[in-house]
Length: 333
Image (cartoon, rainbow, N blue to C red; front, side, top):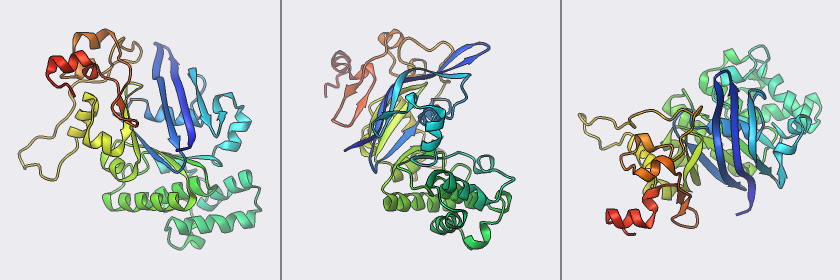
């Protein structure tokens, strides 16, 4: 599959009064054309920092890039000036943010916010941009778009505001859409409608999607591949089937075990991951999951393992995959 985006050895930190927070630590991944890649993990694991790094929306300072490359369409975005990035944002790469009420401008009508991007990026006249905005609102199933284009964000329900955010992100037919928790705080029915809508529009526009979410049910339904992040690092990566059917890292296994099952008995407790993530002011030398892992060994504390390939598309970083660990545990597979 041809790569649209390739992140290479990316490290992002924040300078604070107390010291440097290493939010993203030497991660590498790619997104193919027309592919949906999900990035999952607990809050604070670096998902949103990674997403905002791609389109350079992090405030600098306090944020800064320590090293790495972000290759989009063959060009390194980290070499671009702010003016060049403004031409890419909202045009070739768009983003759906977590909370539409804080992302939409409350003082501007919905139509003006959509039209603004079209006039800026595609140099359309106001009249043509307005017609396209109405067409996009209709595509995302906003009723009476000719009327609602003249309304303010507070006049829309949560689900409708999320549809407007999708319309705003997709109106310029981007090559890459970054969806950061696109269904947060929405009820299950509206969530299903929006996910189905995103899949339909993706097919029509032939675009790639980076999906950032806590909801593993959404991941199973939407994604082609899954990246599992923890404490600013990637611990496992594979196709959706490989991650759900054969998770190889203890953290991935615990994440999946935390999902409620339909066949759970009434008295069965919900599983949770005990403990807390490490302090990224002083990142651990070894495996970042060491303190919370039931399978931790001495080597895990001081040495981070390299990736082990389980197939051409599936890899993880865990000492349990080492041949000596397999022999010691009696699982030589």
